[in-house]
Length: 250
Image 1 (cartoon, one colour):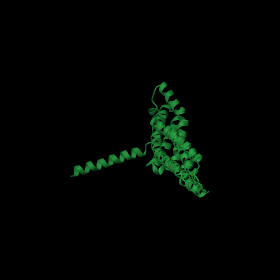
Image 2 (cartoon, rainbow, N blue to C red):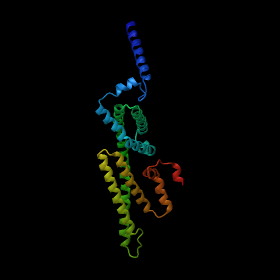
Image 3 (cartoon, helix red, strand yellow):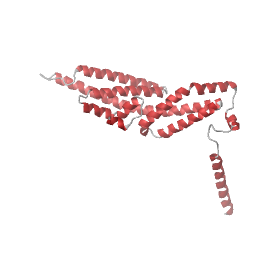
Image 4 (cartoon, rainbow, N blue to C red):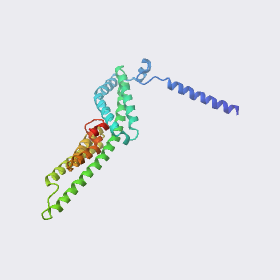
């Protein structure tokens, strides 16, 4: 019994010791020069390659973080754990820069490679979200245009009838819808190639056309406003802006 108690107590002290060591570990990028030197081991060719990765990929990473900041603010509640993932990405980018400015180019480049994988993963999740939203929106547009076409055929076949929606407006709606589906097709292709940043750009264009179609078929200003209010968050996002509730009241 005493032996078992001693083993349990020893194990607890061991765990506490490990915890203390972990809590006392330096923050990434703030290691001592001796510790940093261990992380930055490699030959001159590797040092040059990783230095180029840190420098050449910097703008792409900054743009991706900006995009993720906007889409997470707008649609983060629709993508589980996206806010936590974005916070980690921002902190990891700080680590990349710490290593880079300390001239630990191998450590910086490796951290950049890992960071870009995390960015791609999160962008991929949002790309799927955009695909679903765009599919639903354009399907609504297609149904609306089809309904207008059928109504026009019925109305034009009745004697003395007045066509409510001119054919020109229907034709314009059809053209916009073809463009929208073309943009969505590009977005889908880019998603398959893991080019999620570019995919989101094209999903946005497709959604913009879709919202315009729905609005164009409304005559009353109140009905048009109802469309812009419904898709207010999407419209802000399409402009690469964070949606604010006050925008809908203007």
